[in-house]
Image (cartoon, rainbow, N blue to C red; front, side):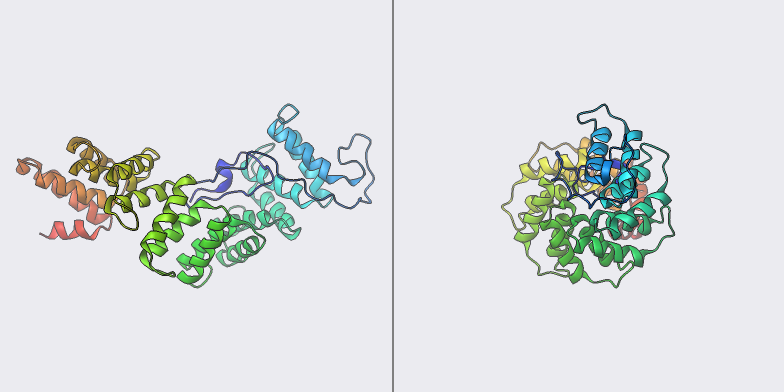
Length: 351
């Protein structure tokens, strides 16, 4: 699982993103200013930008230095400013500094320090701080791994309106990690996250709806959810929508559009998209027939660990004229597919 801070470009007042599958884009502009904190009793220094306890100004200056907005970019200076705001009780300052410590920007990478900062942010009412601490606990980064606590933190974040917390909580509930497995609850969480702007949740909800797990089976609704995910940049959603277009499941059959969506997913490195594209190329559906390209796509996906691709490669080689020349390659492809857990490949090995 890709962690949200690996692709995070800085705190802009919006939601951080975790990818179960890649980080979501950040907002392009600052959110409205947080409410001003009450004046602190701590003595102010003449050169202190948090003068007279104005921690909101301190955070705003930190954002400016972190992002190079109205000032030369200076992440070390931003970290100092966020730290000052956090010391004076500003939860957003704690959150922003936690992100920088998790990423190793503006100072040394220190996930234990990030955990402490996210704790202060979460306790101070920042839902994203609850989310950040949940990620660290889920993966044992800077703190001992504790999936039950991660579930509790994601729950707090979700209840605080943080869509990606709802998504992560849905994934854990769906997997039965840190909480009892419950597809119905996962579907509800994915729907909340999808509605809240987390496109990966739309893709996961689409899968549950397509299979009738935890939600009523509905082909048209599944297709709509995959479309929303794809529009949000989730390539698994593009591949899933492509598969439904290729078969006319819940949508009008459109093989050319399916090819375009499979290509988009494959170009982004998603193996299922490459397999879908290879099927279309092998059969000449929505695109000119090209078995050589299909073979290359199957082979690459098989090498990457997709058992289905190995089976399809073996089948293509077995069906090709002069198959006796390819018998060893076909058998090897089936064997690898079986090792990777593909039932069809295992059946082919036993023939």
